[in-house]
Image (tube, rainbow, N blue to C red; front, top):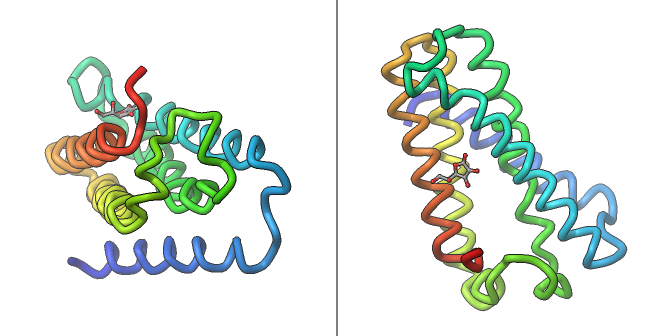
Length: 152
Ligand code: ASC
């Protein structure tokens, strides 16, 4: 792992640790569900914005890609603390999120590492690197959804 990946992961870990510790967060399960779904929605939106570039349907604008990726990087640590106990029902989350906490954690980490890789690629300005890193993010999203999200 290169230095900026490690830095991004460290920052993500600190954010995940510090936010829940500093303030109580969800007073009702519905709010935890709304929060985690909102974060996923924002990440999916900004990931979606760079896909035309990946597919060659839009020109590569390094700064625009970086701006979208930085939103995803900021959001990536956030959903997980919102899978609170008590919020098992009422969303597409499968019971495995809670019964296989280690597996869920591993999937989160894989995703966060892939996002750190996408940040490095976006900073490099090399579209080929962005394409590879974007595919890794899509794979991490998909793997976690397949294992932990009820099929719609
Ligand atoms: C997205 C999105 C996902 C992932 C997944 C990748 O843009 O909303 O959940 O990519 O579809 O396979």
